[in-house]
Image (cartoon, rainbow over all chains, first blue to last red):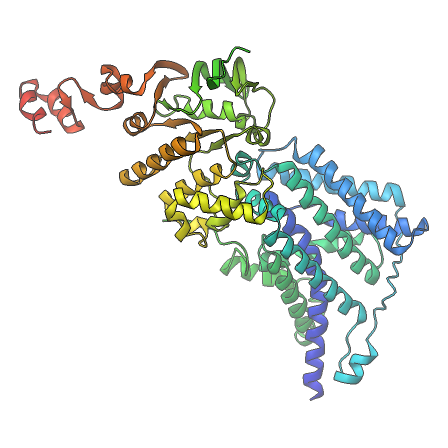
Length: 300
Length: 277
């Protein structure tokens, strides 16, 4: 019985940690949907956003106000990106855009550190990274409060974004642009507005992801690399699917924890770091569009 | 203003270059009278699509530029506008190759066409109902994913989508491309109906000279970036040169490839075989 309970605990911890990956992956998906580009700057955006947030807090802004100001700042970043990077490169190949996002990443990393310094900051969300007593009493499970919060936040973000894309005019415009930007502009959908919306949304997602990660591991430069953990998540979930980002994150989170605990010892431990990539390779071999990726529609 | 109000579109001697070096149009002038259908005819690479894109300002996205001449649409000079602004002015282009949004449903595709307009839900419903009266076939398929509909349905969808912007002028680029003959006539019938009932002026680029001229008021034939011939549709249909080069009808009657080969092989048998058709 305790064995089973322990297994459940490992899986739950893995799933909740997975939502953190999902949050980062979500930012990638948004931009991939609109411009078919893998945004290498997403990691830098996570770092930039949360560092700015902590910076504003240090200036004495209350939590909520700092959050709003940072969102506005990410909107400004989105606007500048659209004006200075995307617009001049319009109708260039996707590879060109990919390289541009790498450059954008460096710029954001540099800006963030120039403005707020390089030392590791502590971010206190008022939610501890320790088990909740109530769940221990009721189910006998050890579940971290921070993990649980991250899970809830991710769930509500996904719900909000799904509703935005499915039921609003902007969302319809975005999906049209994702399918065929040329045709979308021929019927009067303003591409620049759509891009601005998407980059701002990706900025907000980056901020939330950065806050969750920052609360756990400290606000530091390593966040940029952590974001690359989203890559296997995207391969499994599909680059263009919001539910895919979520499920992919959960799968990665749960498998890496289970593998670490049960198989890790045979490999000398620490397989968490590479196990997700092995899983991703299997997906690339057998289901390259991912679990939820948009199938390539081909009429024959 | 040089254009009189009878003409919704007037193009005067435009030259178009791609990448500042490749010249696609040399000297094209044409006029579309308000409420009429004008056909722009010619073979591959003649410059039909380029002409349409010059008008709708879609050229810029392909690094093309109008380097000489002038385009006047509905009293406005077309210079630095972008496609979104042109749609706002009531000019919509249906791009070559249909270009429907494959992952959206048929109805969602149609709704995207009204993106430039502010409609309430009930107005949108009315507009959709009106569109479905022209495109009956699409009503049955409105819940299907557009990527899985047939070529003919996608072409209708592309036109329906464009009509949702409530255009004064429609630019159609090769609506017949890759479609079976009866579908082509069905689409042209709808286009003619839209022109009749909605009063929308139409400029259509076509390779299918016969059906295009039968459904137009006026025609222009362009070759390698120059206007070669123009006239009323009736006049062009009866023009010997058009018959020979674009309709495949010689003075001796309709000819097919086999006959032409045999003729070349033995000129003596010519009369015997040309009668078989």
